[in-house]
Length: 512
Image (cartoon, rainbow, N blue to C red; front, side, top):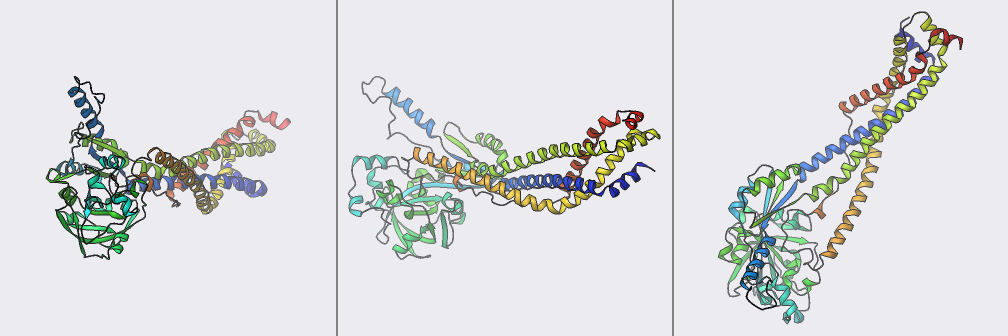
């Protein structure tokens, strides 16, 4: 009788032992398969996130370098002066070079750029046919001329004094956010602003006076899509522009303490126009320029290569290129943790399975000492005896593999979802703490730069949508990998279990 037939008969006769080994092997394979499917689904989700979200790089004026050069210039000019303020930057002479649209277009043609957005910000006054949404009592805001208001206004985009930006003055009623496409503006991509009627601002609106206005502003002034109103130039109130309402949006942003003193800081008073119109308000020096240009990359892993190529097209002393893949990193962090944990599950369960099965097989082999001694005494080779034990465990593994194939996906879904929920909760909590700390440190900044000013990113890290569900599927690859792991467990378990008994001589086995 050959060892294959003996192995099959042994599995059939020893039903209790076979069922025990089958149950244990099934549990081991189920958890290994669950780990494999979770890991596969996690890697797939991370890859989809990478392809759909990407990373961003923002091109803008190099503020630090411009300030440094201004300080050096002032220091050399005032070197012979005894003025105690020598060495301080002169706010009046401090200027930033806007980004050229032609340069921005060249960079947009580099590899890995999926889209780009343009931002040009300024302010405007209200005409006679429109009233801004007031953030504070008009009597207080219209008479604010103290030095602190002037100080705050000096630092606002567009330049100028408090006369241009005071809440009660006609020249500081609205913030103008000039964009290439409003859909790519950070407020819309973050979904803090949503279009409720009409159409968005697009590239086709270049050279026009089309505008998106906030719903509260539209309702207060009885404006609807297609209506017109006038605004005034921020530096010359006698120059007015007739605007056409192309769309109406609703914002969930709220004004901060500083916004209570200036109407144009109220999110409801933000007007979205084409960047060409914003440049018209700012003057001839700003034609075909932008405050910043944000590029969205299709593959975050190629971010460094993009930056290296883009810097060859710009003067790095004048402009800076700041990168941001926090949204991508925040989005995939829970997925990466789950994938890592799933990998550890496979390794740990495989190791534990080898140990458990080795001990069980070792016990069964010791119980079959007489059978082994008889086989060896009649001339059966030790190798064939080991192969018999291997075939017995292999047949049990095949049955366990079928059972695990049907139930492993269910276990994988349950375990994977629990792991993902835990990781998502931990990541969200960590991000919230970081944002709160950042908000406290930046409390002096204008409420996170609402209302269009400084909103240079196409998407912020706070807008990252966590992946809340894993698409766990069972493929032939996972079954093949599971089979290979099961085969390895069988071989190692039998090999470790057989060493102690097969090194003995048949006579000694039969006489002990």
